Amino acid sequence: MTPHPAQPAIVLVRPQMGENIGAAARAMWNFGLDRMRVVAPRDGWPNPQAVAMASGAGRLLDEARPFGDLRGAIEDCHFTFATTARPRGMTKPVYTPQAAMEEARDRIARGERVGFIFGPERAGLENDDIAQASAIVSVPVNPDFPSLNLAQCVLLCAYEWRLATEEATPVSEGLVGTDRASAEDVARLVDHYEERLDQAGFFYPETKSDTMKRTFRNMWSRLPLTTADVHILHGVMRQMVRWKERGED
Amino acid sequence: MTPHPAQPAIVLVRPQMGENIGAAARAMWNFGLDRMRVVAPRDGWPNPQAVAMASGAGRLLDEARPFGDLRGAIEDCHFTFATTARPRGMTKPVYTPQAAMEEARDRIARGERVGFIFGPERAGLENDDIAQASAIVSVPVNPDFPSLNLAQCVLLCAYEWRLATEEATPVSEGLVGTDRASAEDVARLVDHYEERLDQAGFFYPETKSDTMKRTFRNMWSRLPLTTADVHILHGVMRQMVRWKERGED
Image 1: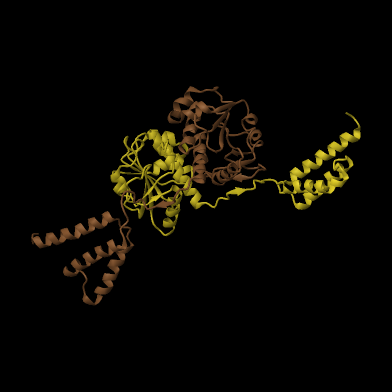
Image 2: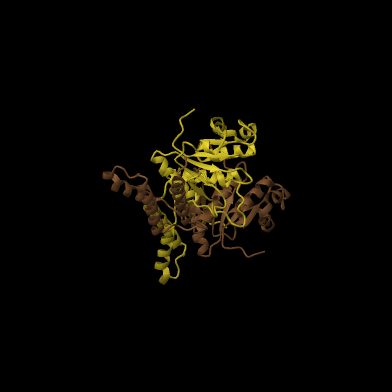
């Protein structure tokens, strides 16, 4: 058993189906969360259906702490978020999952313990549960179809935890295992094409050839070519020249 | 049939289980996406299992367009994202779901059509599929447990679409149906408490009473009280006074 990294506890309150507990464990571990607490699970604890469903995330269930009531489950927490679909009428701050996980990250960094509380599958958290939480998290679902299940709700929160704590590059070039072509690589490629296309009469009429050549060079410079692409493109032109020189149809 | 709002198409390539197609439809509609395209579904089209699973999102399946191959499914798209767990070795830009949906939103705003391509449940997209896409989306999962299913992957992308297009308030006060107490409300509350606590000998010794009163007032001013809270707190103090004045134990 490795020591838990600093992360929020995921507290499942009165969960019903073992399958959903297992699916929640998977969703947590998909994004690196592994501290589950279970309050008064309907079918007792441990739950074989939960274990069967969790497969690769079964360790979370082995290590999950069962509690008799929510109060006991969150007694060591300094800040807790209650998840609810409809935060209407509650006198509590309402966070998006993103803002909640950023808050959790910052509080944990300051040494606090943070819990995220999820209600039973059908009804969700009761008002008496929510009254014990410091704040509310609400996923901005389509109001015409707000039917997220337990594991989906856990998944979105766990995803936001990872975004809040990982340095993800929004867009990367994806040039893994290849190299971006240098300006000189591209310039030589354009020289090669330009020379052959000149021979082939491509830049015609003469009065427009300078403009055409600039446009042509500009196009190649703008494209995100790799050295492999440049290699291929040289090959294309060489092959066309060879084909021409063979003089066949 | 209402006209589709401007949004990306969700393209499912060779999906296997009808249940997963239905779950993907639900995940889309949870976040307001309703344009599905289906490429070569294993069990034909329409698929009764998909319809049964989709329940409230069944309309998406009724309106989903089936295609024989991916090329046909994306032929009208100006920009396509292929979802894949492991974008290694691909010479294509790799986006996070968030960056991808922001890109999609901006392109759609400029009049482009955008598609998100999801592979079959087990194997995911093949390299020949990915080669047809403009870019890659990769969910930043836990590398030790990257097992997202189809509907979960669709869910996270649809969630990011909603975040990219909705103005969500990261944290709202949640004081729906109540009113935040004014500074004057709080000041009068503190006056009330201070007066009675003075009578009760709370601010003792005399030499420290000014500091204690400042700390006390500061505490109340810092708390996010509503007018209802203030009302309750006045009642608490009145009741304590009444209880004292009755002279009982």
